[in-house]
Every structure is written in C-alpha cells, then in structure tokens.
Length: 410
Image 1: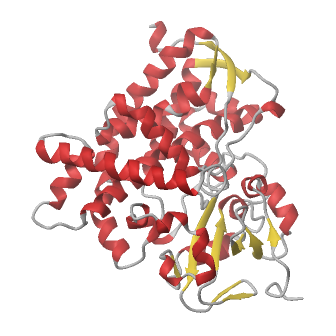
Image 2 (image 1 turned 120 degrees about the vertical axis):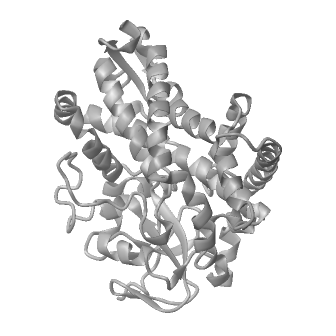
Image 3 (image 1 turned 90 degrees about the vertical axis):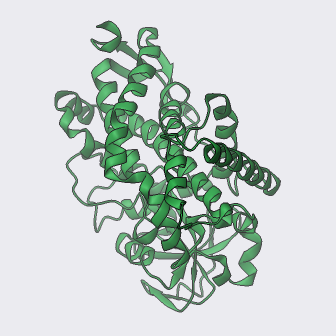
C-alpha cells in the first residue's frame, strides 16, 4: 500500500516532542508520513533531514493560507486573526522579503555584539540572586528572566508590563493544545493594542535607543511596513526570541545533567560552550514543529507527491535524529559538526537564532563558572512538560548546587 492510500496516523503532543517515541511510532524507513496532528489537522509530516531541508527552501510550499485546501481552514486559528496573519511567518515572497528587510536590522552582528555586555550583566545579576541559596527552580529564576529581560530591555518594554506580556506569549505557544480559540483571539487583541501603544510612545519620544525606535527610524521617508505589519512583526521578534531561549536554557541544562562527562569537558574548557549550545539545540529543539506549509503545486517529497492545497509539517526533533546524518542521534556529542535544523532553513530561518546562541554562550559559560556540583533536586521521572506540540518547554526544573568563586563572592 502506498503512503497516500494508508490511513493517517493520529499523533499526540507527547509523541511530537519526543523524537525517539515519534520515530518508533512512524518508523525510519521513509522520510514522510501521512498523519493527523494532535488537534486533528491532517498533514504530511517530514522526518527526514535532507527532505526537510529541501522542503523548507522550496517556493512551491507556501506559508500563506490562501494556498490551503478549504477543508484545512478550520484549523488555522492564527491565520483567521487579523493581527497574527500580518507577520512574516505567515507570508511568502515578495511580502516576506519586504517585511524581513526592515525587521532584520534588529539582529545585525553589530547590534548583537553591543548586546553581549547587557546579556552578561543580566546573567550575573540572576546568578547573584540564587547563588547563596544552594537550590533554585531554573525556569522561573533563570531561564525565563534572562531572555525576557534582554529582549524587553532591547525593545523598551517597561518592567511593569512584562508579567502580562509573558502570560499572553504562553497563550500563543499553547496553540491547539492548551489554548482555546477565544484565548488566541484575546491574545491577538492584547498584542495589537499593547504594541500599538508602545509604538505611539516611541513616535512621540523619538530619541530612544531601543530597537522599536530604530525600526521606526528605518521607516522614515520610506515606509516598508503598514501599521499592523509593524505591530505583528515586532510581536514575532519579541515572543520568538524569548520562547526559543527559555527552552534552550532549560532543556540544555537538563541535557548536561544527563551527560556528566560532557558537562565536565565544558567546565575544563569553556571555549567548547558554543559547540555544546549547537548540540543542545540539535538534541532537544526549543521549537519542535514547523507547521502550515501548503503546496501551491505538486511537490515530490520522498516517495510521496504532495498535491496542491495539502499541508506539509516539519518535525524538527525527527530531522535532527535522522541516522543518515547524525550517527547515534540520542548521544550528546559536543564534537558533532553537522548543522541541525532547529532554527529552520530557507527564507523562514529564525531571525533570532544569533541572539539565542549569544544568550546560550553567556549563560552556560557563566553558570558553570559560578555554580558547582549541579544536580537535579527531584527525581527526573517527576519532570513535566508544557502541553504543546509547537514548543518543548519544561514546567519546572529544580536543581541543587554549590556556589563557587564568582562575581558575588568577589
């Protein structure tokens, strides 16, 4: 029986975030599978690395829902929201190119290098706050505050607004699992209103050195984005940058605790941290599912010809566990050289990837310098994950440690 004639395999959120379980369920003999996502949406799930890489850069696979079959529209809550659908992630060339040209200035090497001292200061302050206690819960004390403070400072989001901002970010990342359509609508209205107010404040006070002010200056005399596109893409940069880094930090620390030999190597040679960050991203991607690609024309992926209007989904964990490219994929190996797909590929490659890598470099280097004897404070079997098949986020990560020589003790 051909894959097209087979019954679709209904997947759970847990399976989508666990590459070992996913590949056991689907098999490794083919790179594409007929599935139902946890919300019931049908699609072709790509698990092969080479096939995913080609699909992510194939212009015949569009992000705009205008190319989706009518039967799929009921699953596309974010597209139906007037706010969310104006961001780059849901658009294709030439609209995507026009949007990216302006907002990509937020992630130039010059801007990022200027951020390093700020990332270091925030990291030091956070570790100062927990070093003497001997134990902490990583998500709330380190993983969330670091990227949230970095990006909110950079974009000028006031401290008093950050808790509410964080709540609505969580609604969006719980799409189709823990968030309802009404909650998504409320989140869209919140971000549309709030970012509109933030932009108006920057328009009145145009002397700020935050990123929104820089983007507005880039608009002067040659407006690239409409008002709603500006708001939607600032939302994308803010939320995407935070969510990726939160999961990378927490998932990465858990991976290191599971692999004490690799952890010891990093302590002995901190110059290996950037390589370790790449392996962390491969082993446990912060974003696990790239959905909503719709065929504009017939597209061959593996042995399947995807027909116009059909839905193609990329499994980031599965592609990073493809044994054709990653021998012993479950092994944490700092010395791997093969590039992973955890930040996607093609025109929708994650703009915030350099920032996430910078935060990972600073965080893990500083943490291993400041804290010793790190271990889980609870049995690993008690750890739980956020109910989502788009992101892989721990609910909590309690650890114990000893403070070593560092800034707080100096």
